[in-house]
Image 1: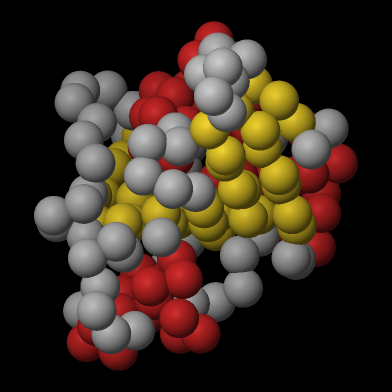
Image 2: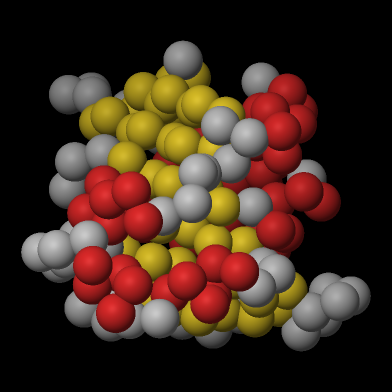
Length: 154
């Protein structure tokens, strides 16, 4: 269990994660209540990876694609937010299977709303807001890639 006392700690964690080459093809799920800091972590991670411009939450669009053209090869990033899903089949109907089969980083908020249709997450990050504004963070690895990432983060 980690503790992030403030947003600077969230940014520092995101920078450490971004520095790991294996993250470029990882699938990371983000768990936590509304306001826990999931999107804030994603924004810091995308900035640390080199994403320029506005980074918005995909709550209404369901997915926001990003690209880092300056990396070699260029890095594709897909930020999903399944909060508005009512049925896990919406994931399949939206054609997301093709995105998950392609190279690139996939980040998913509210993955439980997509159900068992999602592939196993490399890393599952659960963020819990504390009353003192800090965050408690539990990170679990579910694949060999996730284990390698987790080893270098803790």
